Every structure is written in structure tokens, then in C-alpha cells.
Length: 339
Image (cartoon, rainbow, N blue to C red; front, side):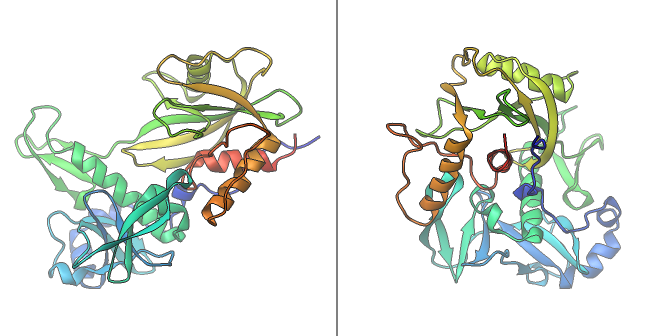
């Protein structure tokens, strides 16, 4: 009998090496003293950051080039190998052209290129970065989105200012402090009842997605709800299926704008009809393991510039989630497992 499948690979955006303990960012003298030798991650207005073209490492800037001390809008990201890392807003300098590259969901995107660097986004390029760069980019993106939503005090409405080097906001009126928040969301791979891992997986697509794009089901955890109860409720609400044997797989930060995706798997009877939620789910279907494996092969062909083939005679191609998503890691682990 086969073993229950596990993620195997760490989700792309869960990778990190930096030490970002609170004691570092609440020690101003220490951070200021190490600023001249620190490195900076730039984020432009769209959330892109530069990498040296063809590399897996962020194109860091020297902190000292931004002044003798951290600017007011500098955000401390953490320490790695005795070097401090920060983020600041910034864009390409000089003339920029564009270059095509594989983006999220396997679609080709055009990104800015200047001075031997390309400016990439986290969804499309996160999986190509090394562990340190992936962790820094994910943290910088999360704090950037939070700051955009935390400019005013939730109690009195007065403007706030950043404190703790980007890890808290303080009301300029009453001194109330607030901190970055993460919204928990479950994402569940539902498979059929055969064997240990099932022979089919349940995929669905939203009406706003491009043709052929499918993924596993997900939804936000409601107030007063356990994670397992959220899995059961979301699957029932979205496709009308009753699931059992809910099992945790792993998690991944998803700073778009401030979620953490909590991965689960569960089982359901594929002989029962599916009822997609009106306006939320355009289509839901059971897909065999062989078809999912074929879809992964097609994804590789697409990235290499070859023309993918349909997953079955007369069937439309299924486009799986992008490489930076935990959904892809979950589907790959299930596809590689035995029934």
C-alpha cells in the first residue's frame, strides 16, 4: 500500500535564510552602525525588483549610497552572514527597454531591462531565486503592501508613521501602535477515494481566469473558524462536494496583499455531481493523475518554447498554477505519488 503523499519540496516563497528576530529591529544603534555595509532591495511602484539578467540573485544596492543612515522609509528585512538587508522604493535608472520571459501561469510577460538588470515580480520569478533572495523579496513585498494599507490609525483616523524600522506603525495623534497582519487562507487538494492518494484530483477555474487555467480550491478562514472546518466549508460552498480525512501539508506566505496559504489535502467521492458556486467557479472537474502529469510536461514545453499538446484527444490544454504557488507544489507531489 502506498504512503500518503507529502509536499516533498518546500514551497518557493517559504524559503528564507535571514535572521529577522525582533531584537534586531528594536536595536537602533546596532542597525545604524551596520548601515554603511548593508545591502538594499529596491521595489518599484509595481512591486518589481532588479536581478542581474540570467541570475538567481537579487541585484542589491549599497546602503551607503542612500545616505549615512537609514532613510525614514527604509525597512529592515534581516541579517544574513553578518550583512544587514533593507528595502527601499526605487526604479530603473536611465533608459529601460523590455525583455520577454516566462511569467506566472506559464504566460510570457514583458519586463523592464536596464543596465544589465531585469526588473521582475515575485509571482513570475520567485521560484528562480536562491533561498536568501526569495525570502528577502517575499518579506519586502509583504511589508510594502502592509504599509500601503496602514497609513492611517484604525482608532482615530490620524496619519501614522513607521517605527521599528518598518515593522510597526505609530499614530501621530495618540501613539497607538499597529503591526503587520497576515490573513490565513486554506488551499486544499481534493483527491478521489481510490487507494491512499486517489486516482483523480479536483480542479476548478474562476470566471476571470484565462482560458485553460485551473487550480485547486482555496478560501479565507472566517472569524471563529478552525482551519479544518474552513476546508470542509470552502469545498462545499465552491463546488458542492463533501470532503473527509482533512490532512495538513504545509504553508507558504502569499503577500498579495497579505495572506498565508495553509495547504491541506482531503478526499471526496468523484461519482457525486459537482455544483460550482454561481459567479465564483466557472467550472470544476475531476482530472486523472496521467492528465496532470501531461499538464506538467506541457508546462515544461511551454517554458522551453515548444508547442504543448492537449492532455487528451479533443480536450483543451490544462494550464497549471505558476511555479511560485504552493498549489503547484501540491499538485506535483500528488502527481508523483502512487494511487
